[in-house]
Amino acid sequence: MNFELDSNQKLIQEMVREFAVKELEPTAVEIDQSREFPWKNIRKMAELGLMGMIVPDEYGGGGMDFLSLAIAVEEISHGCASTGVIVAVNQTLTAYPIMQFGTDSQKKKYLPVLAGAQKIGAFALTEGSAGSDPAGMETTAKLDGDHYILNGSKRFITNGEEAGIFIVFAVTDREKAHKGISAFIVEKEFPGFAVGQHEDLMGLRATGNCELMFDDCRVPKENLLGEEGQGFKIAMNTIDTSRIDIGAQAVGIAQAALDAAVKYSKERKTFGKPICEYQMIQDKLAEMACRIDAARLLVYRAAAVKDAGVSRYTKEAAMAKYMASEACMYAVREAVQVYGGYGYTKDYPVERFFRDSKVMEIYEGTSEIQKIVIARSLL
Ligand SMILES: Cc1cc2nc3c(=O)[nH]c(=O)nc-3n(C[C@H](O)[C@H](O)[C@H](O)COP(=O)(O)OP(=O)(O)OC[C@H]3O[C@@H](n4cnc5c(N)ncnc54)[C@H](O)[C@@H]3O)c2cc1C
Image 1 (tube, rainbow, N blue to C red):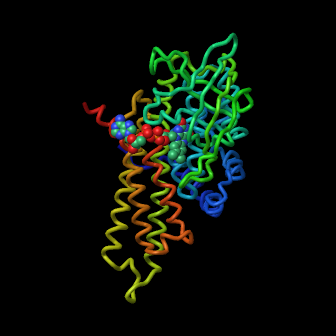
Image 2 (spheres, rainbow, N blue to C red):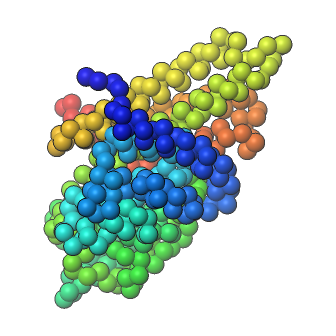
Image 3 (cartoon, rainbow, N blue to C red):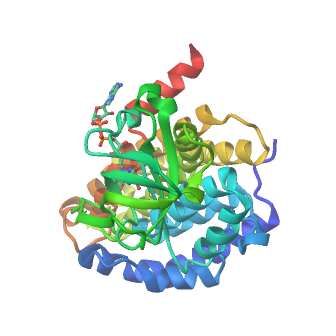
């Protein structure tokens, strides 16, 4: 067992950390308030190869490992949590299922575009009445000659307003329950596709999150991803992988909260001395540091297991995502406490960290769902 990152991973960590401090942190407050999708920074990240790190080099990506991506997502999220999830969704939720299940021509057509961020990707599984239980989805796809005709809607789609390429799940055979779900690659320009209402979120406000509508949306038959009826498997396989990055995102936000709390505790004085000299404040900092490190190790382990080529890493990914999101919520809550009243204002970043963090325990499967997945692996 080796707890050291290799030299490439260390280089990526340093490079992304520097980029996040210089380019992402300064705009994080502004885009949180304006809800502006950070296209400028996405273009810069594409130039640095950060939008297609795991995409094989033959398709214009970096051909890197999943641990490198997790490290990058952590550092990006340390600077700006909205940008962190945008990057993760483009890669593990959109490019990855095409890499795993796509045909040669789908890979050639879509992967270079996603890796270069000429178009950004999105993943559309959730519906108004189907979140934790996606098999209950109502969107349908019917084959009609050379096209599938999609009808229905999706909710909460990260990147949705700005994306050009969508992985969309729909029922092709209701009688087969989850085995009757199929996956499609949908382009924004396909007739019958429309971006719906913007989701006015508590945090991660610059992620273009919205509803998607499919009204007799015509999807060419060749845009079926995998085989008909394979959609649920594709969704679960994809989510296993992307949970590692959500864990990384949570670790990045948590570390940003700890760094801010340490700095502030040395500056703020009460009763004539800096608050970092009080044991109750030290207790908070120590507890935050331990939980964050433990979460980071679980995230790195899940990524390393994936990189080692182990076929099932569902449990490792769920543990990483669950513990990292809990550690993150703990860290941001304590960071706000260290800041006292100022932590409750928009003058300091911990207020934004607090809002950005809650969804870590909700999306890509709630904490309750992660525990169901973990328990299933034990029973
Ligand atoms: C900011 C944001 C971004 C998102 N991005 C995307 C995206 O890009 N693509 C996408 O497809 N979806 C996305 N989602 C949707 C997200 O994955 C779902 O919100 C999440 O899976 C929970 O589903 P739900 O909201 O329908 O909650 P529900 O499923 O209605 O759950 C409500 C509550 O019941 C609990 N619960 C449900 N079932 C059980 C059970 N069996 N046992 C115990 N407790 C249970 C849940 O844990 C939760 O606490 C996003 C959501 C948000 C908020």
